[in-house]
Image (cartoon, rainbow, N blue to C red):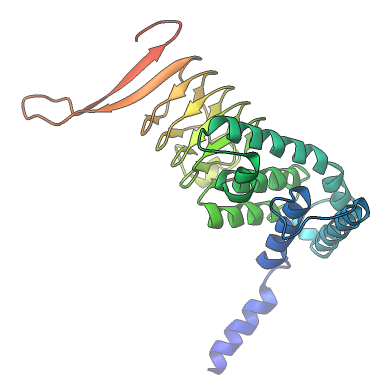
Length: 281
């Protein structure tokens, strides 16, 4: 028992300084609550309380960053202030995402329904807030926020990904968006979509490993798109369960069709690839 206690003691002494997941999760949900009354436990009834709450959250973040200089290379108080200076743009972008989810889902009866119950809203909001922190050069905390959202929604978005305006995730569970993914405006993806890397080699960590999805692309459920050089051209539609490791030009339509296996035929499945500029390929 003494040996075990000694091991635990050593682990505690050697543990790097870092805010606990609980502290970061609470901070994120408090920010989300002040931004969106539909998500908050209770509505705030006056402007003074909103201002007080924002200043309180800014102070909390600044204290976390000042106590953990290993998580950034700047001034903790300044970084906390910079994050809240940019929060209005984060808010506006999330509102646009909600617009995209409302327009993209016939089942949605109101924006309030999306704000109160849609996993896509929660995961995208976590990403927008985490990405703003990531852009300021803050380490680990953004990842803790998006992984918290991942645990609640099944949607895994790396805070380093770059995602344009009016982003819509329908249903959501099983979505994976890698660190160096680039996504344009008005992109819609369904559940089970993976935007991932071809290789997991550690030496490729600093390279662009994940695909580029241009404006106006729709990717249906279960599709997997891999590789840093893979570009899905603007306006394309990628069908369910398609597996892509090569680029497709704008306005492409790629569908996966299964066929029953027959002993006299070598064909078991096939892809259909069409392009609006070149009717069938």
